[in-house]
Image 1 (cartoon, one colour):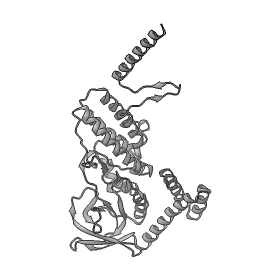
Image 2: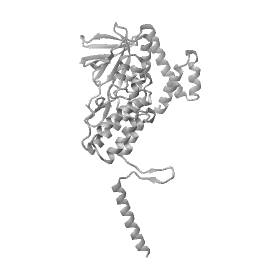
Image 3: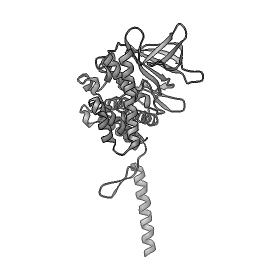
Amino acid sequence: MTARDQHQADQIFAEAMDRPPASRQDYVDSACGSDDDLRHEVQQLLNHYASAEDALTKTQATHTFTGSGEQGHVDLHTGTGGRIGTCRLEGRLPDDSLFERWSTVREEGEQPSTLLLAHQRLTLEDARRVVIHAEALLRLDHPGLPRVLEAGTVDLGRGPEAFFLIRRADGSPLASAPATNLGQLRHRLGLLAQACEALQELHQHGLVHGRIDASRILVSDDNDVCLTSPGLLQTLASAVPGSPAAETIREAAGRAPERLAMAAAYLDARCDVFDLGRILQVWCEGLDSSLADQIKRIATRATSHDRNQRHRNAGELSDDLKNVLNPTVEVTDAGTTESRLTPMSIGIIALVAAVAGFSLGALLL
């Protein structure tokens, strides 16, 4: 199934969930028409939700843990008793304002992962909503996003709490200081374009990262880019509007101006775009060149106080960056070509054309 088809299935699923349970199947049949593959995908989403809802109704949690940090491992089980696997706890990682974090190895030979346990108590309805959002995270598979291996809610005796098990992202944080020269700026722009592509994968699934800054964009030795915490903050903020996640988004410094006025549940991809624009603004400080001026214009649009003037998602912003990094000749509506060549290139072409015209004239005499 293509990304476009998956997006359509997600939309039909969301619309079906807004209808009474008795009418959901009729709506799905009508919306999918003769597309059996699309109907199957939507039905799978409905089945996942029904299973999670059933588990929540009976146990108020989708998963259970056995074992402890002192024992050196935790066994992860579904609400119906199925065993997911053993997480060997290698050590406690620094907590942040939202998660208790453990370094783990899920199975021998598996890539190291991180167990995140949310610092909040969930009501039954909140837990159900977290599971719905987590379903979207579990389907994500993009090289620029650490894989979410398992997600749901668990009751450790304090009520249902959200947890996520994700593969660890390795690398050094993207530079946050102003660029010192154009070569450095151009290199960073290439890396940020990669980050935009990873963010676009979230945006296509209706998810928002919610906390983008240079420290959350990791760059490997091979210049591969990976985002940390793929949409986790926004997932909890959307599912539980009054949660610490929502407050973290509202209080984060330097973020989009409307975040103080809007509920976290209504934040969309243009808030991530704002954060990317702020990174671009800092990088261009003190640089005076055609390239820097073009990037400043892109950043101005991305950080516009009128959110409707911004790029709609990270994909649009990535296209703008690529067009600056790799200028092309475009065809306008009038059928003429519009050159994006540099002034020096245009001058050289004009000189060659003049010489060619003189030679042709001499031959015709």
